[in-house]
Length: 111
Image 1 (cartoon, rainbow, N blue to C red):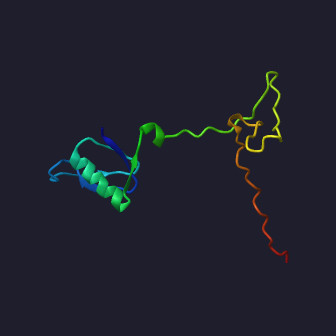
Image 2: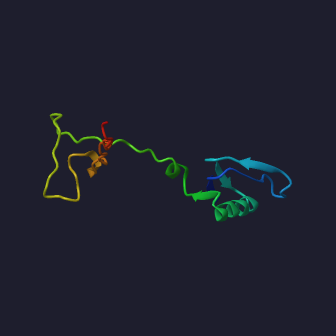
Image 3: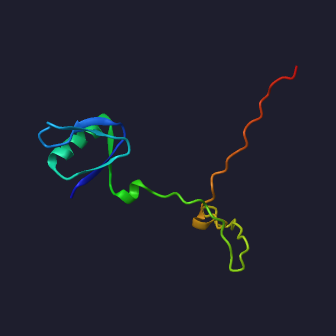
């Protein structure tokens, strides 16, 4: 089974098993190491911090969905049940979005 890698830092490397041709591996490029020389090259990239191993294409491109408020059959918003502190029933999936505070006001002196 071929291992998959994602390039983190653009670097030049071999593009054939003899090392006579080179190629620029670009940022965010996914490389599938099908042969042993490719796997050796990618292991060097990982060791130097230029690449990382990824398990699957779907895992590397995870879609982050926006939180959605939970509603009942009538379409009304559902509130959180205080008897279950580890689950927030007011939001789909049981987790509320992260609150972002207001920006702090500047404290400039008036002249």
